[in-house]
Length: 197
Image (tube, rainbow, N blue to C red; front, side, top):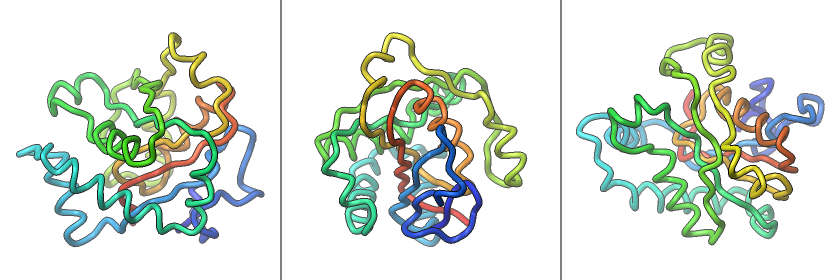
């Protein structure tokens, strides 16, 4: 796995100390590689015919892959909360569900961590697929906000796991992590079902 700040190889996906800042994501743990059957499953989960029935299967694959990550497993001893990456309301209406939310529910249940829907997507963004690293960053900038009524629940949390379906450049997770760190969260890690190239 790579450091999602510099995109170079990193031990287990942990952000390099020299790349990190006070508000950086601490690392990203993808469960699987986004190709073959995984790619097909994720596609049918996100696009027509929108097979939400895949939630349990994908959550199980997600969990089984994640717990085998050497650098991830020790983190499970720390009190944590799960926060899904939100969809913009327009996309949510079109799809009828947020795939990251469904995966987050599965992970929350398996680890016994509370799920808090603390983020909202305040700006509609284009899909990140096919965009360069620079354009991905520009596209996602200021796309999120924190739900003010939930700030107390996340302000002094030792650790947050941000859940999304696929990580490529890490722009989305970095942007969300920045907000959470500014709100007082000590450590923010990304957990994703898959890692794309």
